[in-house]
Image (cartoon, rainbow, N blue to C red):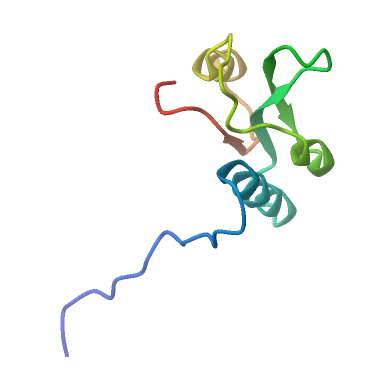
Length: 102
């Protein structure tokens, strides 16, 4: 018998079915549907359509109109996440969409 461990991949390749933003929304929607996480923190255009804001949502329909890759954000996603988690004690499993610089 061999002492070698079997390699189990921990990632999967997403099929390229559109632009990066729609693929990310599709991934997050499936994660919510399968209860991989309880909520998603994602950027979304505000109703006035002149800027973006982060929203914490469980609503898959609202997630469909989100914009996970906005051109610019006035508030850092890291600051938003910090304000949500600073007190701790939450059992909410949250998927967070942020830029690498955040």
